[in-house]
Figure 1 (cartoon, rainbow, N blue to C red):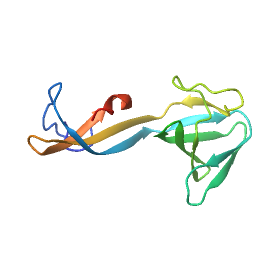
Figure 2 (tube, one colour; figure 1 turned 30 degrees about the vertical axis):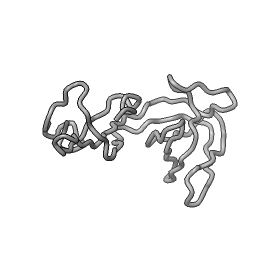
Figure 3 (cartoon, rainbow, N blue to C red; figure 1 turned 180 degrees about the vertical axis):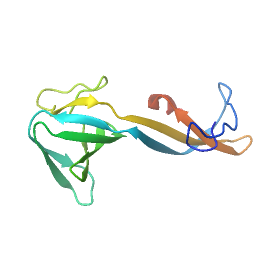
Figure 4 (cartoon, rainbow, N blue to C red; figure 1 turned 90 degrees about the vertical axis):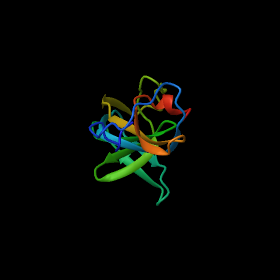
Length: 139
């Protein structure tokens, strides 16, 4: 368990397997953005509410993947605009039909998911780096 959400921060304790902890919050740190090359002209529906918008991308352009939001939704950046939208490219865990696919992933993003926890017995708080987002469900 780290003092801060940083793998270079001081390790303040080592948890034993089966230790009881409670999660308090989490942070996703983007270490490297991803890149998707656009394969066909498409207008993306941006899901954010302030205001809902559309983002037009054309074949050959690069769209930057800033963050995975969950449930096949991503935060993308393109020409100075952010857009939260559905995935439009294949990944190992998501297969799309030809009509759904508008891009090809050329560089995966690298993210770290940090979870702030408290150890109930001692009230000590700290941060865990989660190497597998699927594995934190039980926290």
